[in-house]
Length: 258
Ligand SMILES: [Zn+2]
Ligand SMILES: [Zn+2]
Image 1 (spheres, rainbow, N blue to C red):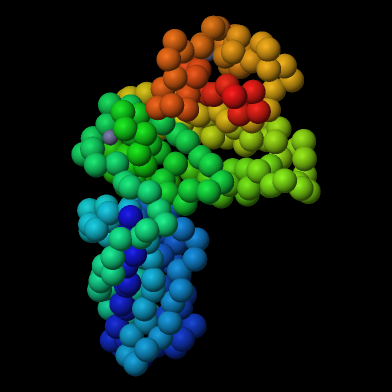
Image 2 (cartoon, rainbow, N blue to C red):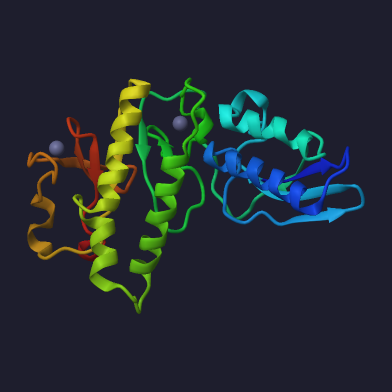
């Protein structure tokens, strides 16, 4: 992924508040379309321009064709607050983030979320590398706001349950690893809806951290339909279970792994 800077030139009378609002609205729409990643976007004014630092999944992430309908409208609104279209300068590779999947299209996707990654939660099923949301193959012009908001909640809970001295012990863990938790049901529903819309499998990853009984962990059943779902060989070195009809994947609880 790439670190880049956006320059918004002041082209008409504007106030700091108006300009800030316009930039904020535009960046938010880019987040909901997966065109910029992360949560913090340092923005400063220098001479006759505003500058925002962003992380991009690909160099062409901000092409007009990758915008959602809402993103295009926010882009037009920049002029109403006295700002130019943004000028993009790519500064270099982001050493702290992982590589974007190179495939132009995908036969299947995996919806996978963890506390540490700020990249897209959609992964290429073949290479298990993140696919920018705007490249998922959607044609409606709608953005991914519900999915991005779900990711934020997932990461907040996952972050808590990964800590050594958790402030919410059972509840955070239960949210992240219980298939029937509100968090997982919301995520699973979105995977299902996306699978229907894109007409391809979108597997949902169910995290498994601890188990009541490690001796029988490998024999656990699909929590959705109750079928056997153990794979003969792990997939991408992470997934030990896969239920095709439910498009659900999971792992042997990390606490039970050697
Ligand atoms: Zn791929
Ligand atoms: Zn199943």
